[in-house]
Image (cartoon, rainbow, N blue to C red; front, top):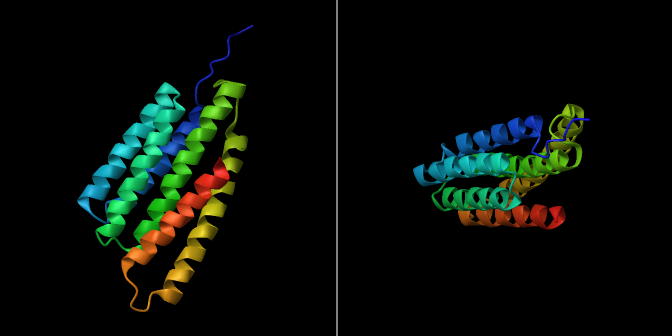
Length: 165
């Protein structure tokens, strides 16, 4: 009988780091500070997956959140902010799932279908939420400051975080 390696899965790790990279790329279209924050968030997320630490993954989520706030305050475009929000939340959620699946089933188990379905479902929910936020912004943006968009994003992120826990 072989020993089970209770580490984050390779599939989930690859998907999470890819989504974090996308969030960092979207932040690169806003401000240098936000882009640097996205890069740090990606590195912390990768470290959390290597360590198998939920605290480190949560710290990465916090860093992405701060980078998103810097991008919004710095005047980043609405589309870049929404893409960053979707990609960073997806990265954090997929990383958490990779850690959970790895703890329960082990790293050696084939979990590609399980993790792909989880990531796709999360992505659909996030895209629908971002679409609603974008539609609200388009309807209410006549002369509204960009701060309103940032506050809508903060609300959406808080809602997703509350539902997740």
